[in-house]
Image (cartoon, rainbow, N blue to C red; front, side, top):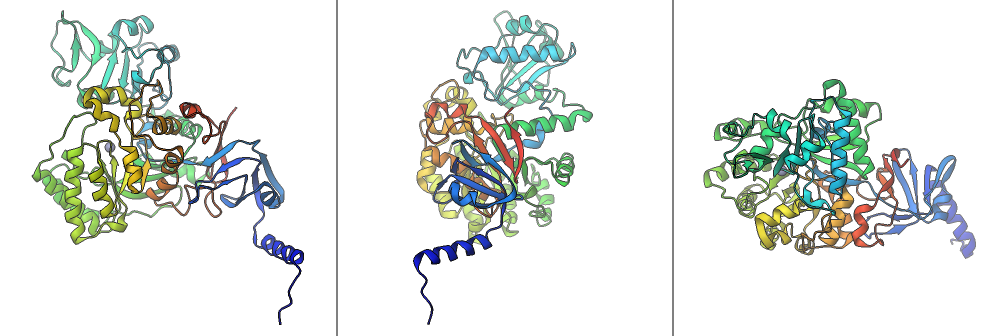
Length: 553
Ligand SMILES: [Zn+2]
């Protein structure tokens, strides 16, 4: 017969057993508001970390008992903590190649401040060197004035340097030296590499410094902006990574993992100094039927999931068939049957090989046409457990989302409205208020995650995107989107769901025992501050795998 212990003795015995089973922690964070983003959205007081993993989450008392003799203790003094934020789609590696050469305007809310930054840059570089940005902003983000930049204004401010300010992928502002550098002259024909009519002139033929014409014109200018020198590439990339950590970002789905840049990241990983996690979206480019012929046999050879929890290739994308890659600002698309047939040949092979897919799909007709193809593929090779997702997804609608749900697909949502709200309203009118239809997507129950598509198509800062998701407003206060969602759902889409999207759901996306210790301590409480102030939240400490990678001065 079993002996029955008195309650107190039983509790003591149980406590001893628990204690013996729990590994002692070498870092404990106590006295905080831990927004775990676990399945129940549990709020806790404290976290224990051992090595690179979280070993316990609980009350101050529970966690306090776990500290080993040499454990470091951090008193959070009531601050809130969220999981490391994950951007499911950023052109991260490319960003590092120009980062310290650019004047970045991510999160800059004042036009005056932008001008000060341009001016400061001009003072910092040699006369004649470019002062430039490659996207990630628009004038509509400025609260003081949303006026466009003029040639004369830029000439007054920066007379001795060529200036090129790329506004999203939409428009570029040049000063006189910038126009001169591209051979754009009053009284002379436009240079051939610019689309017809893209160089804006006044009635007398004087170039205003504004270059319109979308991607074609924007790319003609951006291609000439100098990347950082080879000797400065590491420093530029490290500065970019530091800015990501400062913004609370710890992991990325990376579009375009340039194989010439990856070895640098691998070197830092080997030195235990890589401060972001890089999950590549890799693919085989094809833009003609002949290229599809050549790509098909190579798909089986694509090696995904050969890496680890810092660097891996996990998805096919972001383009399947080049001619069906929607431009950002076209008002409509017209995917042709012969192009879709090529898209389907590739998609069939991707499904046959059991590969996950993350594909650029933006305009409504293109999304419909892609879903037609996926439904055909699905009859032969079910895509349900392959993690197929449509990316960007701004012009999606309820019926498309329902089709995707039936197929077992997901949505990687990149709300370009965050910086392009004004431009998108110019192009799409009131429809832009539904782009992306966040509330519809959320209500559908489909799994979806946030990304930025930075650093040219969008700004990269998560709290600006979260502010937008909850309020529908750009940083200027301009209301551009009506389909707002709760701050809890928005945060889940930036953490737990994105962990699934990069195949790291066992490691990332929530503050839970067993997961990697990627977390961010915030200066204000994300869950209780007024919604309009979410954009101003600043991380005070960011941790990747138990290592502090950013700490406020
Ligand atoms: Zn894209």
